[in-house]
Amino acid sequence: MSSLHDRHRAVAPDWLALYYQDPIEITHGEGRHVWDAEGRRYLDFFGGILTTMTAHALPEVTKAVSEQAGRIIHSSTLYLNRPMVELAERIAALSGIPDARVFFTTSGTEANDTALLLATAYRRSNQILAMRNSYHGRSFSTVGITGNRAWSPTGLSPLQTLYVHGGVRTRGPYAQYTDERFTEACVADLEDLLGHTHSVAALIAEPVQGVGGFTSPPDGLYAAFRRVLDRHGILWISDEVQTGWGRTGDHFWGWQAHGQAGPPDVLTFAKGIGNGMSVGGVVARAEIMNCLDANSISTFGGSPVTMAAGLANLSYLQEHDLQGNARRVGGLLIERVRAACAGVPAVREVRGRGLMIGIELTEPGTDRAAPDAAAAVLESARENGLLIGKGGGHNTSTLRIAPPLTLTVAEAEEGAAILEQALSAL
Image 1: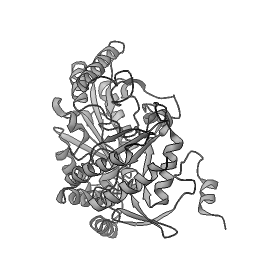
Image 2: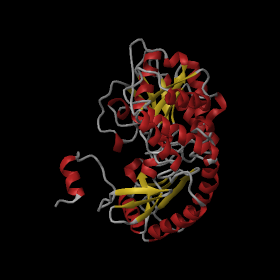
Image 3: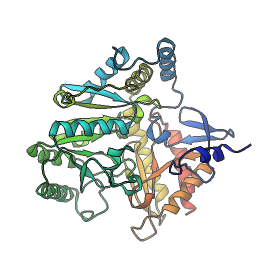
Image 4: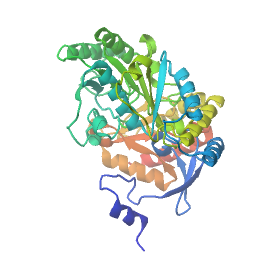
C-alpha cells in the first residue's frame, strides 16, 4: 500500500508545502502537545500556524462545538444567528473602533480580501499602500499586495500596490538609526511616496509581520503614519490575523502598540479566535462597513458551530488572563532563547514579544539568508520532540516560535532546551 505521503503527492498541488523531509501526520493533541501517527509525542511551539491559540482539545471549546453541532450546524447569514450576534457584540466592544460593525469570514485571507473591498469601495480608489516583507493571504487580491516574494506567485492584481518602509526594524537603509530617527525616516518616505500618487484607498499593515519572520517596527510608527494618512483621508487597515487576542502579551491587539493616534479604521482577524475552527472577520466603522451598494452574504462565515467555538475560546482566554500568561511566560521564553542563541554564529537576531518569537539565521558574519540552516534546525527540533515553524523575507531563514497561550513555565524551559540542542548542532 502506498504511504500517505505518496498519496498526498499524487492528488495535492506541487506548491502545497509540507514540513520535514519525512512529513508527519498529526493525529491528535492535548494541551500544548500533539501526537503523530506513529505515536510520537511533540511539544507544539507552532499551533497550526498560530491557529490553535489556546490549547489542543480545550474541553470548553470541544463541548461548545459538540453541543451546537447537536442543535444545528449551518443556516447562513440569511437568517438570524444568535451565536454570531453574540460574538460580534463582544468583538466590536473589544476592537476599540467606534460604532463598529463586524463581518465574519472563514479565513484571514478572506478577511483581508473583504477589507480591501471595503476600502477601495469607500475611497473609490484601487491604490493600496502595503509594507515590505508583508503577507496578507493567498487570494488573487491579497497575493498582489503581499510584500514577500516567496508568498506572491503573480504580479497580476486588480490593485495598484505601493510599498512603504518600516515593517522590518533591522534591515534596509534605516536599520542603523535610533528608533526615533527610524520612525522619522519612514514617515518622510511615506510623505514622499504620497506626493507621487493619485488618491490612495488604504494602508494595510501587520503590527508584527507573521510570515515575514515576526519582524516589527518601533512602537508608535503606525500612529505616526496614521497622522499622515488622516491628512489625506487614507484608511488604516490593521491586519491582526496573527497578533490578535493577546498573543503579543503587552496588548490585546497589535495596533495598541501604535494607538497614540487612535484605533485603525478597519481591523481584520482570524486564526486564533476559533482555536482551530475556521473563523475570520473584519471590524470597521459603520460608515465604511456599510458603504457597499450591492448585495452580499457569507455562506460559511458566521457558522453557528464556529461562532460557538469563538465564544467559548474568547471567554476562556479572558477568564484565564492568557494575554498576561503570554507576557509572563513569553518574556521568560525569549530570554531562554536568547541565551540558547548566544555564541551561535548563524543567529543574526532574536526578536519578538509575548509568545511570538523569531530567530533569524544567516551565513555567519553576513546578512545573507541561511535557509538550509533553518531547515536543519527545524528537522533537529522535530527529532527531539519539538515542532516550530519558519518564515521570513530574504529566502525564508527565520525560525518562528508561537506556542499556544496556555504554555507553562516548565514547557517553555523544555522547548528552549531542545532549541538550544538543535542550534548548537549548527
